[in-house]
Length: 362
Image (cartoon, rainbow, N blue to C red; front, side, top):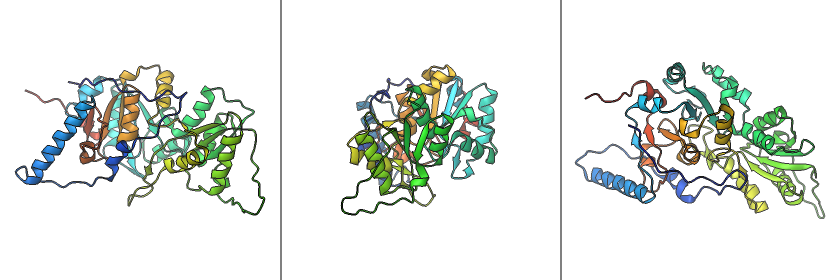
């Protein structure tokens, strides 16, 4: 039986600037992973006490503590569409997670619509399509929604003037999606080698026709880009500040966490004192876009992801069912930490559990 949850508190609409993630939502990242303990040990008692604290905190916040998924069929039958995050859910780096092809085939055989959403803006939808193909997955480009695409889609949704330009602090994925949408752009990786020689009286020029600055994850980030984007936002009347996401960290290697797109966004926020409009998770823009495109109600969607503060919050903000998988960055200890206030409807080890978890028979 599916749990009934309180209605989520929605983020401000995309016409307003979303607030940055609160420190509370990020605290769980710093907690260590606990080991297994004997049920009779003092540590086990401490664990049970911590779990009770989590449940009490969740109850105080009006949230139902996440339930371990036990009847996959009931969840599958309750929705029409599954939205999957990619990294940590479908793959890790360039390696497919076990059981993913069979799980996706099973869901398609049941008539479920599958959509894949990622905050990574370094690739376009076409480039992500090639990655799915390389991993042996048959995924249509129309089923893929990256935050690079979301930035272009947002500009289309507001009828951004075609005679205006977009300055990009980001990588190739954003440029390609802007081109496909018919928008003029400048910046991107080509500005990665540009430097500013600060001489007495030096004045930096910028294009007065820039009507939006789009900031995403950028491995070629530098001071030139910070200053150029700042000048556009400060001095060009009505210039938009758009962020693909505000992720604090990303996983470029499996050895450690790396500074995410939020660090680039934070630099521009710091110099302009202007909050960005976020189009990626957990903002509801992509959810609203998907619901409209496919003609479905969000209550008929299950969001599946491995991050609490982006994937699960994205689903909750959109009014969807939510399933956390432990195959990515979040452990059960993080989920059940007293510092964590984001509770999905269900959690499970990985999406291939859909193939094995059945309702208990009496």
